[in-house]
Image (cartoon, rainbow, N blue to C red; front, side, top):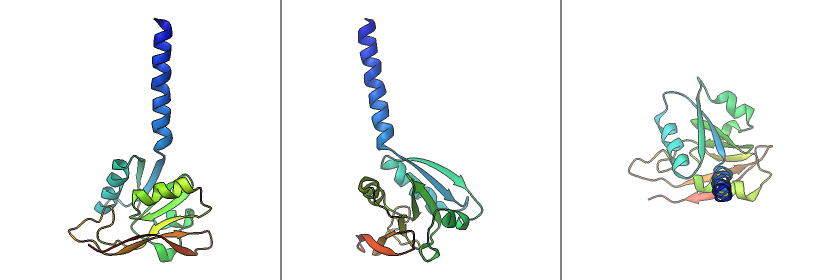
Length: 147
């Protein structure tokens, strides 16, 4: 009986650890009045991320803290496993970055393009997800077409 309980407990513990390992925590800094930021957080949670949200008066200091170039600014800043996330970055691109172990500083979707996660409004504009390094150099990491 005790052996069976130990095995069961071990399996539950392993399953819990596997789920925790698969869902890294994203810390999000946003203003309290931004509704689209909340919708982006919902998008991340729906895609398996654990998200902690901190409402701040301005996200500018967090962009500086996490090395996001001002030219990539958007309405919220996040950080996951040491990578900065600026704006409405799709969960798919975040997962791809985490799997890559890239030396990049982070990902950004500058501005607030319609159709990006959290900005669903009946239309979708074309937009790019940009990978940026510590020097602020960007490369296109993902492209999304207009719909």
